[in-house]
Image (cartoon, rainbow, N blue to C red; front, side, top):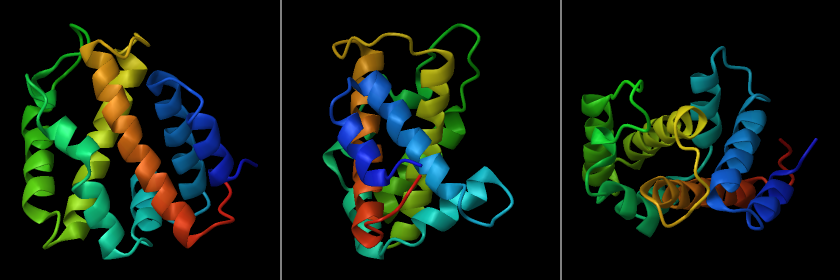
Length: 163
């Protein structure tokens, strides 16, 4: 069993393409220790252990701002020609993050999860470059920073967390 601290340290040595997967996997493994029925419910339950101030820090981070300000917007970007875009869902998630980061951080952090899951899907099914200078690489760099912060916040409240 890997500790969350080890996963964070390992991710720090990897390019964003690999670090994203390391952190996403560690987060899922940690969530799988929860009793809820679905992966989504387990992840939500795990993250809801964080204090509202942690939600606000994540939702107002430079990395979230970078994802929000992508041009063209993330919700309009197809990783490959077969990808279905969820433009309304993604745009709504970004709007929720922007509107609720400080006054309803629990809603904002759930929207962050929606964005991260979408990027995870793009990484698994479309993003195949490790070059950080490309659009894919930039998206993964920003998303990895968000995941890193989320994992670090979880580690702060549960220093012995094992994935």
